[in-house]
Amino acid sequence: MLKKNFKFIDLFCGIGGFHQALQNLGGECVFASDIDKYAIETYKENYNLDSGINIRDIKEENIPTHDVLCAGFPCQAFSKAGMQKGFEDETRGTLFFEIIRILKYHKTPYIILENVRNLASHDNGNTWNVIKNSLKELGYIITETPIIVSPHQIGVPQIRERVVILGVHESVGIKEISVNVPNIDKNDIDFLSSNILEHGEVDKKYYISKHEEKVLNCWDEFIHGIKEKVLGFPIWSFEFSKDYDYSSLGYPKWKENFISRNRKLYENNKDFIDSWLKKWNYLQDFTTTEQKLEWQCGAGCASIWDAIIQFRPSGIRVKRPNVFPALVAMVQIPIIGKVKRRLTPREAARLQSFPDSFICNRNDHQAYKQFGNAVNVKVIEYMAKQLFKLKP
Image 1: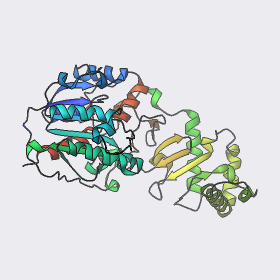
Image 2 (image 1 turned 30 degrees about the horizontal axis):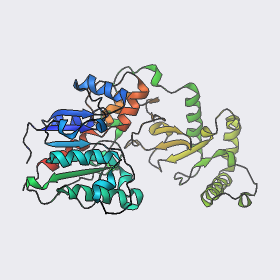
Image 3 (image 1 turned 90 degrees about the vertical axis):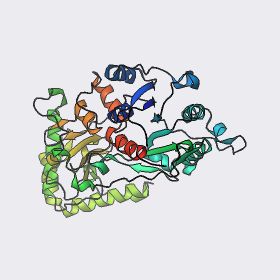
Image 4 (image 1 turned 180 degrees about the vertical axis):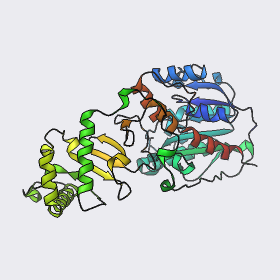
């Protein structure tokens, strides 16, 4: 088991999701590295530690001795040149190689790595196999298959599947990595009652515009008016009442299917849809995006205003409010229907399990991007506890 006052390093650290998690467990960060100047600013402001070091530029012997290596490393394809020179050569030139050379020198007892869900299948499984075998070659015990975990599994109202790689050096004496990942049903979680939302006054800039409210009221009326309560396809209003022959236009099958289903929907609700279109000026005031609806609530929401909404290039996406869609380096900031405004940076921080004492970047665009790129603090803390309590 790892001692309480352990030391860790934080590679590709961003704004310090790993730092926050391991600090909560009693760890001390002795080295951090990143190259994004805005993330470096946020990290310094919160942890009083300069992470502005390009990991490619520092010699492994100049990195302080540490008990845990943390890294949310970028996912890159590896060479398939074969095993003539071993895995070290196969990873050379990638950022994962920087982790390998540090581990080779320090023989760090514990490692915690995080990456996107796609890592598990990236490059037809080659990427995972190279990572797994590279670590094994250095004497690390890891799981044969990637550990995939989402915040909702530990009660955080966000769907965000990620690969977490836990490892222990063979010198620690642990023979096997065994972790328990709980699986709370996402339907048992309610974002709206989870203390994510800010109370009191919120800056007016986060509220939706009059035009956006008009668009959503229009579609809310549509959802109330049609007979169908479960829709398994996107609504394309521009296909209503059309009768051109789309079968000869060379469209892919999925597009033909969507057109066909929209036309059937129209025929089944013709009287209502005709009056709805006329009332709303045939949606001529709406952009092409706003003329499309992706209703993904099933029968779980009575109204758009009960849901979580995103204006996306593919249309207006509407989802149940039990769990939030994955925070990414966000462009389309989700709207909380109940309060008719977008998620604030503080709420984004809470969704990523950062404490309210965490200082968000003053630039909203950067703040959203940073929390979208961050690891979820509670997920890392939970997985680290599992790792650190393993006994020889």
